[in-house]
Length: 369
Image: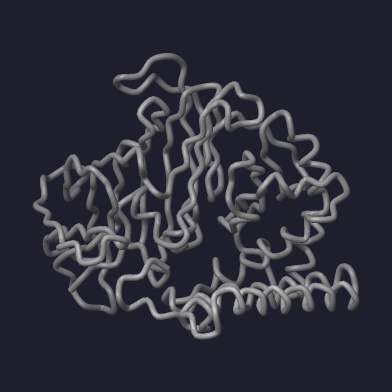
């Protein structure tokens, strides 16, 4: 009797003073498997709920809600919202703010950026951290489109894992001062919640092709544009292997050095570590992996986190096909040998009987995937 969320519409104010996102999210709720729903259940972690409403003809009607018991702390807490009888779809609004300790959000100080002039925010929602950024159905089995309206203090720039719809100046939000800008983004392809991503900082961009662009801090944007100049070639080769690219844009965001991953395949906007800027394009093959995720993982997604091997496994398979077509059999063979060596090292490090070395790990007891 639980509804499925088919669309998220978030409205955020990015508050660098308190290190929170505050605002609301509207949820388009539809029946799941044709069963008339009586409630919608959203995952949360550390969020402060300020009000829950059912929208009727765009009018807020206060709704009751309840909290599930916390069984596994790593998984957060379920938010249950009763739904009225409806035909087709219902829209629920949740007003909330994040915690300053939200696990999905990394707030960087001035000293942690390249220029040292402005703070920086970026998100990392994989695997189950989106619930600390927005109440959501935080499972890869549920996909939804999303639209976001985000207000940020100028001169900071907001980018997201979606396509830019509009940018304009706006009035300072309540409790704030100075000049502000409002960004609007839309992701038309249904995605799992772990692929909702945001970054806000001192950013500039350079076009690499009509559909590819690189974003970075001003001090590294030119070097980044040169380093990743072959991105369009990677994308075209991936299309030769997998078919049409469905996401519209493929942009890269070069993050400050504190980004803890090589890359993150956020749709339309791959997050990349600046350690790939070697000056000779020798490390940009990571882009082949992240581009491959546009089909395996982002477009076709594992239903549960126990089956995450399907996401990364098929992505590595496609990545190697891209390398083979662009650089030949010897390069592909080298990549395969390197990957096999890395796998053997991981198994030896954890031990052959460790759950993390299993193709399908055991997560039924509330383990954090």
